[in-house]
Length: 466
Image (cartoon, rainbow, N blue to C red; front, side, top):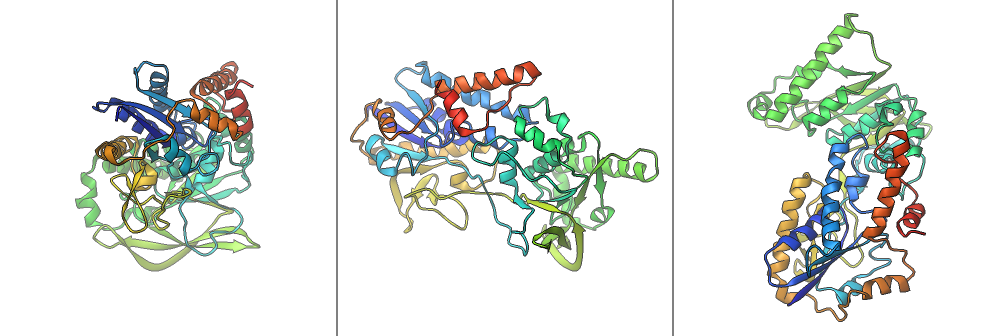
């Protein structure tokens, strides 16, 4: 092999890191990589899954952009990366097309659906998935422009960072988001939000949360919001947590943060501090068992109090409580989506694989087909995990170089011609530069980093210079 032609489906961090690592890998052949993305803009969940008031995380986009710009500008010699946005695998481009034009494909399509929560009433009106809400406030072009923010009392189920992001965006005053890249329609929706109380529920105790200290601290720094603590949640005798979890520096820091909130609450109760206009209630040791429904709508959440089992798990206590709420968000994890002609594990929400080598239903390797990122291992881990994950997949790909597909057509112009013949209005990296400049220009007069363009057709039109 003198030149490897590789297709990568999904241009989020997982896909771009895989491309970058292949460019940097030791090898005796050149590589031509084509990145295909279903959205007009690249970067996946970094652009559409990180709340707008976290610009430091979005700084990852700068590193990803450098990868695409360097490889598409000819700086990498014979090696190259091309970006084709607004291309849907399974619709605009099929597996047989990839086999005809490439030696292999890596699927890095992530996980963007909400994981299910199987409790009675979860499908009532006013019940939402956190992933859908995140897509809305991040300006995803394939979700509705409006969101039903009508409840004064809202519940969020989950004890991870997504639950914190959702909670913070719901409870935060809309004007405090104006310095961010929040789309105009999202700001207008949040401005009309009548919320007064938010209840955050977790099955286990405060030392078991999956938050990061920075995210937790930020939640308590939201203006005009009181953190409300239930002292019962800190009264358990939990030797396991004290002996194991309290050796973790992050747990120690988060415990201090919550202790500070408890002190502030005591000061409010003593009349030493004036109350805020909004309140965020933390409910630990609270397992959701049923959404209370009245007239087809969410009216409350029934929870069962839990207790530590002494081994890091929980036991049910048989003590139930109902917290009145009018809407609820489940933030219990993301879930992958199946891809045309590719095996899928419906239970785990991933493509079945071994170290990134995709397997058929009998457990045998499918030549030329690989996976990386969340669609490979499930929605766990941070950006650093994504890099090591991509490296594992690429090592397998390079080991398999003698058993890949044999492309029938390998000329670079074939793919653009194919998409044009099918009427696909694809976008390029140059088109992303146009869209990027346009969004930055929208934000500049208002002192903002950018204002996102939301409708898909407008994004496509700007990207294509039409």
